[in-house]
Length: 207
Image (cartoon, rainbow, N blue to C red; front, side, top):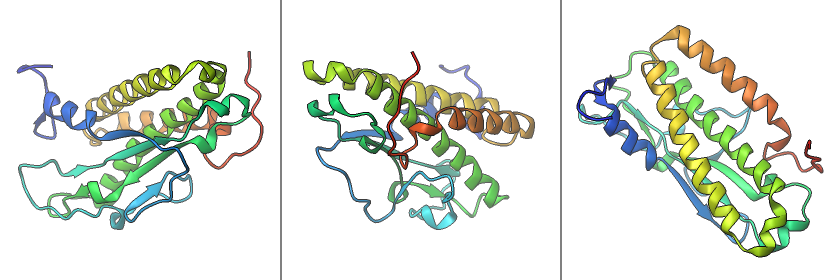
């Protein structure tokens, strides 16, 4: 992705990629995290709204919208005995690091929905993280290399998915591709439903 890369909303893919690489933070907490001001945990019935984007901008040098997410995990060596890792991994929207330039957006709700789709992609990967952590929990007794490996792979996959979403939908302007992605996201979330944060029931993995 160099000088000949196509633009996304007037910005080169290279610039967008650098932003996306920094837009998801993985943090390890030893204990469960309480949500701070401006943070919002992913929820199927509590979607993003304009009020969730705390940074106010009006600058043509910036992109019209930017979302930052944080995935936290509180996995310890004792978790090898657990039957469910859902509460151990969180997917959080960081409102204090996100913005929508309302002076440059024609359809505000459409742009919010597009940012929600990216939050949904992060949720898909958070659920994959929970699933993989449960599957590989036996390796926790040997150290945290497996968790670091999952971290790195999840981050890479999410960055790739967000870039593909932005490219294929022309930053949310291609309605046909947008509909395809919405269907794909809904399908993936349904497939991984038992790995949602709220589910505390025992999970039996398919062999």
